Length: 112
Length: 113
Image (cartoon, rainbow over all chains, first blue to last red; front, side):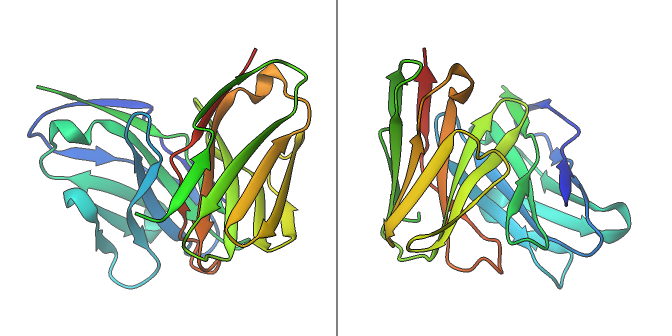
């Protein structure tokens, strides 16, 4: 079965600074990859997804993610964070059994 | 946003009582899922449905049952609630399981005292 690791439990970033969230997965082939964001008290919103093709994918809210097969990674980036980006971010992987596996999440705090 | 509602949004119940959570969708999607979210664990799949009356277990199904009598409704029942089932429960829907793309409801916060 596939697994997903988000190494950073909590990241604090200054408003206007860049943000990178890490996601690593274990699976033999190329999985389907997703990033979701959860604002406090809300459900999960799909930020972006990767199935195949161009390894750099653009999502909503100015986020992008890059798939690196050699590193089994799918890291999420944003060049300049806004206070509204404070949230919890989840990486998810779909592979082989038609179910999503989620990482434990990374909480992002944005300081003024 | 996908048309998914969950009810109730908050519930406090006592140990040993049965509890039913409802997920309602207006997207006519075939696949529906129930997850629980706990700190440090992300989301874990409880049960899922691939059509009316067709359901299957996820990774944390013990103590939970589900039913789907209509395309739009997916019910999660805790037969006899325990404190370990205190959690936030999310419903998700998907048009195609092959794409793995799921859309989530707003969640239900359940506290078992």
